[in-house]
Length: 424
Image (cartoon, rainbow, N blue to C red):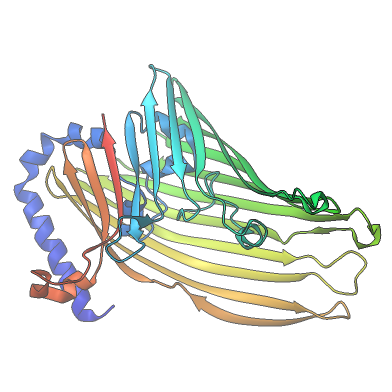
């Protein structure tokens, strides 16, 4: 980002802060209403540099226990532009969460296969979508999750379950031996807990299990791809001072599976092999500062990822490993300017090292390594618009700042990714 853009962004941010000073009385009288709004979503997180160290309604996708925090809420992502001036968007999902009584909440989330998120039980077959498309001739879509939470004292438990099924069946009356059935199914489970420890702060943990299953059945052959994905998430908000919290984050992901083929006529062509296995880890160390109508947060994270391509049993090839190690920096700022407007600013960078291997026929591998960077490193901007308990949160195209007076009657898009929420 250029120096001029940085200067103009800083100038705009200062103007917003000055307007905030004159709105303090109005905001203070609406603090309770601001809390009730519970607004947010992926647009808010993206606006703040894809921040890892804040709480948001989007957390319900990863930890069902957050249903106790964001009760009586309808929310979702309208997403980003899918077609120019079309009536749809990319990466949309819809959720609703209701409080049944003092202790219980119950909610549901509907999502699509273009959901932008870390792996959750709403993700549609995150590693083998190409195989699904090849077998079914389309991608499975429209995942559904039902989740609930139970609160007792300072402890909240959550449990979610998702299920998706799709299929294709071909039946031939004159050639029944050619009949075939192709099916995809996926079931996922999420369990989470949030513990509030008064003066110490808050600790949360979540575990997710996802089981994609693709099967093709013919009269003469059967093919199956089965996978198990395990994800563990830990995060804490530890009070250091009245307005400052230390926020450590730790995430693990493991994925493995099998590719089985049975030839009913010639068994010599049958085989059992392992799918590529995945290992991912992220360790983040963040700080959060919150006072009055300001929220500042950020810090570094270490990410390690490895994909192993397993050689066939008995072959003369070695396993091939592709690895990535990266340092992520995420910073975000949020200012409640008035009771109807929130301004957001973020910055993110990724610098990583990639190593890729190519197996040879003598159990050796060729290897190459290179440095990689994030696709969209730099500043992010966003706005939150509040209309009572209804809110629209959106990223802002930073070209808006460059356009100046051309924004009046100009033909460029102002908003990028959009989230909506309604509290009641």
